[in-house]
Length: 218
Image 1 (cartoon, rainbow, N blue to C red):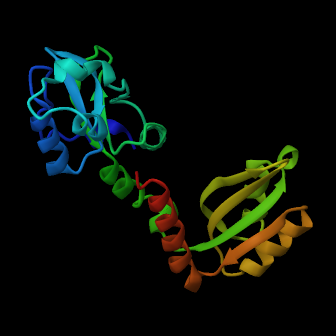
Image 2 (image 1 turned 90 degrees about the vertical axis):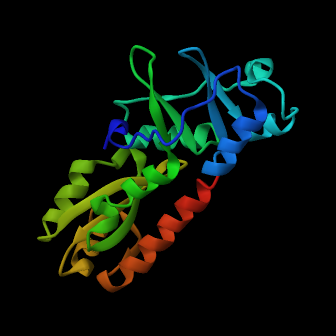
């Protein structure tokens, strides 16, 4: 899931000779937190809505370009890299720049969220199990062996949290006997924090996804 598959070109970014009112119009039309700004063909950065609103409507962007925040993403980056940048820069838009520093378009956070929601971990049916163990004992291969030894199949796995010296892992799996998988985890020293059976997983996944959306609602 690479950025180059989700690039948008719905508008032409302003240049430094345009006014703050034009930039604000684009922000409002597309519900953006920032607007990419160019000087000729050179990308100079992203100006926030707050900065634009603090200046006169007829002021040229050249006058406030020093307030631009310099962040972007490359076309070959992953959508996970994009999510991190959205969060780090409190933005919902990322200019996409290639290796030659040419502007290719932009990436919207809503488009990335929609793409990630189609991943098997979210979209595929299955049960969810959250387990916890000491960080020094954590092994992805061991988690896989535990699941597969019970004739179950892993759909997805990720680290949910690090807490002091312990790590929490969320596993989505297909199994006819979740209790047996749970017992095996406990036998290998894992604490089973939560388990959600197939008929409960949809509400749980939606709740987790909604929490992520609220966290990223910037």
